[in-house]
Length: 314
Length: 314
Image 1 (cartoon, helix red, strand yellow):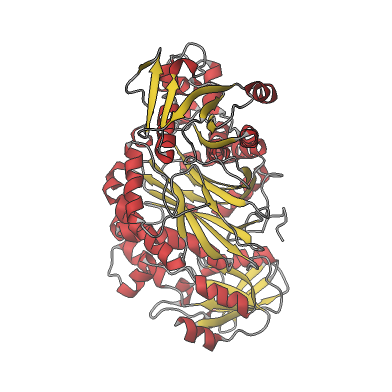
Image 2 (cartoon, helix red, strand yellow):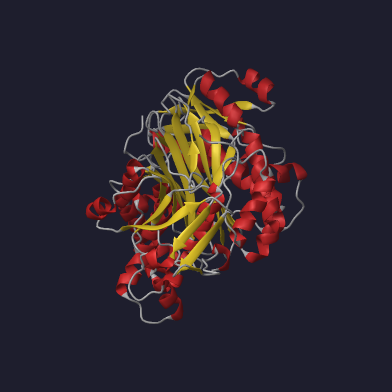
């Protein structure tokens, strides 16, 4: 039977690093130290599992974030994939590849990992540490669900809704890269994204039947939804909620937002959602039969080449 | 309901790379492309999950292995942690961090990943690809078990058994690093390790109740077992099966062997094991009450400082 106590490890520098992390993870990690983690999936539910990597100089630069934010952000981003499926987080496995010049920051990175888990309710169940040439945090999230939201279940006639508003994360990234003035409200969206775990459960119960999270940018992620479901998605740019002073064309290319897009047959109660979560839920478009494509309109006229970004080209 | 068909992805270079991998994974991968993978854990069984990273210039050098061997080895090594728990592999999630200079090798790495999955019976359920400065393959293995073998369940009076024989992987690593003549039988143990999945199921059914896999070297891994169970482990070096021409002192420091050490109360039928798997199963020591330590003896005399290796110092 799994207990919260950890398994003692033998001597060694790698294992000292793990012991130090376990002190940081008190109350969050459980039963670390065996060859693998054990987890009960609630009876009648399916396991929902995803992996996401966060790598220095690809997903962030060292001078942009504190070590604690780096740890938090890696796990929050990975957890957003559970939100996209309306799964309840159970636990995470965390693989840390740590260069010498980051060794002193490892406990703070660990503290951020624990922050994210406290936010989602996941336990830290296991992991792996290794030396590396660049810092890399690879998070496996494990959750469970009775009924999931999928990318492939959008149908003609569905209405599309978006949680929150877009553009802050992309604006922060832009300012950080250009080394220009950074709006603190933009920075916090980049540094401390909120996976929409509870929101997603509400949306699934309210009748949403398809979803994706906005990680590559709304335009790219809608293209995935359209391709997965074999439908045309039509979005009016005027309807997309955008943070102040950011043009909609930039907001729909803003990645790492971790908001959710869902499709629903019957109207969702956006006022109830907003009251409950302090976050807008906005109707942004509809689903039509047709080619698998995303049609973005401004004042009724199609706007071409509204893009996203590509992880391989950051 | 999960089907073997994949979910279509939108356009983009990252997604082209994934589409190409999916062709390589025909018959092994299933239902790739949603935000997370779905998995049924057999009723009454627990999920067993572990993560392992394999990083260029830490765990291997490019000139030592083919891309296909690199992919195989990463997944085989991760799968060994399921063997150590006597879990049946269900699926893997694979996070690939790929520098530009490795892009052309990605499909071959993928072919090796599929080879390893065919060997263990795991399906490829999902993953993540990203650019990076160094090649890194992080494998999450998901399995299930009704009763598991653990590190902490060794008891005084138990007998310790080892599968296979040790030393070839360490000898290969030594020759590769020194650029000296490499015995092909050593190389194959380094390049194509065999996780002891079926063997582990047999051992658990035959009465073994504690286990660890030899990844850090027998001496270090026994220290983990002793620490986890709070016992003294006594090993006679003469009893440790070693490949030809390797001294036992080096063989017990040889890492990445992926053999299993198990503890059992009643004697195991080593002849039946050998006949079934074409692999020796050898009694190598016993468990005593006492300090949590490993006592290595040669001709009845304690040998000090028989070491292992430390992932952070490779």
